[in-house]
Amino acid sequence: MTVLHAESALTPGGWRSGVRLAIDAGTIAAIETGASARDGDERHAILIPALANLHSHAFQRAMAGLAETRGPGADTFWTWRETMYRFALMMTPDDVEAVAAQVYVEMLEAGFGAVAEFHYLHHAPDGAPYADRAEMAGRVVAAARETGIGLTLLPVFYAHAGFGAMPPKPEQRRFIADVGSFARLFEACERLVEGRPDEGVGVAPHSLRAATPAELADVVALAGERPIHIHAAEQIGEVEACVASLGARPVRWLLDHAGVDRRWCLVHATHMEAGETRDLAASGAVAGLCPVTEANLGDGVFNARAYLDAGGRFGVGSDSNVSVGAADELRQLEYSQRLSARSRNVLARLGGSTGRALFDATLNGGAQALARRSGVLAVGASADFLTLDAGHPTLAGKSGDAILGAWIFSAGAALVDCVWSGGRKVVKSGRHASRERIAARFAATMRRLSAA
Image (cartoon, rainbow, N blue to C red; front, side):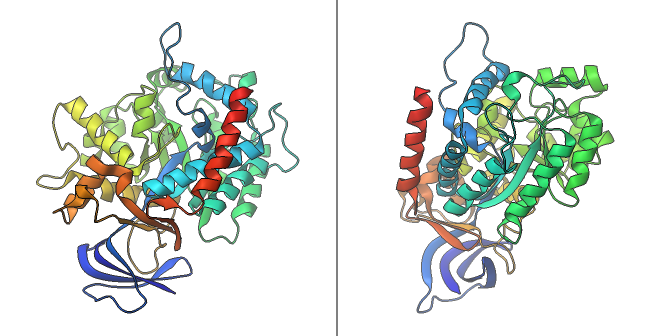
């Protein structure tokens, strides 16, 4: 059993002084407040729960920065996607494992303790299944285990290029499955994480454009009580095509026909009308916001204030991993609202801290979306937490919620000192234990891909 003592920690009851916390078998076994440090305790100044990253496409870290050249016409999500397809067709299983390990190190060093991997790169480059149907998913799992990040694996069902069961494009061949082959993949993914308390599995129908209503129902049935994640209403073009094909906007159609409840995470949900916003909030589902990627792709701005006013839940993810930072996602979320509303502290409660409001909502929403007992310093919870560097000049003179404000709006990842995921200490003094080795492997992979 490992015991930590923090001078100050953010508990379910708020900030508390003198917090002693015991870790056993990956969970918090005991916690007391107002306590003095004892011999043998590992001592820290500031301790807070770690956030869960609820939406990642790990392999896309390989193309970060390579889609930032303007083409001959208008650049949009749809033109960016062509660059993504080219990378997807080049990557071997070894490449995927190397890139995933790199991005998971970056997530941990930035303050994320767990990740939901929305994994859709299933097949060999020619589109044929690997002999082991879960070969690529197994590489994602291997990267998570190597780095120590908690994992909810979300194999993606992707059958069509567009609404109306449009045949898939050749460049999508590594993603494609029918319901039968996907069920076998899902079973293989279940076996990959079986017996691992720090890992779980769910399903991810890619989107309403990639799955017909009947296919969606079949895929959702596989989940049982486990997480269900789906892209929804990321782009205006997607919304218009959904109306033309299904007679309703994507979020409205899902709410009316798919049984959306607490198991669900609707990723992006950027373009919603007032009724959709109200009813998604009432469903108990989580809106999976990826503010940095959404800004990078020019998606639009989520109507966060109205959604929160209706009682909505949200978490954040790093999606394309063009850059990775827990604080960065929260900062971008708030700043997008400020630009849209031409106001300040938009997502704070009246008289409250914006940093605390963002942090609390993201903790709760992320834990729900991953079906993970984390996001809280309490007995029985997964031991996912981090410490902040109290000696950093940005924190001079600050305490309580002002610490969160400084982390999110000022110093970001530079404040992260140590990180634990599932009780395993994986980051110390801001650096992952295997950072150099994993970075060297990633660099070699990138040189090879760039030369291809």
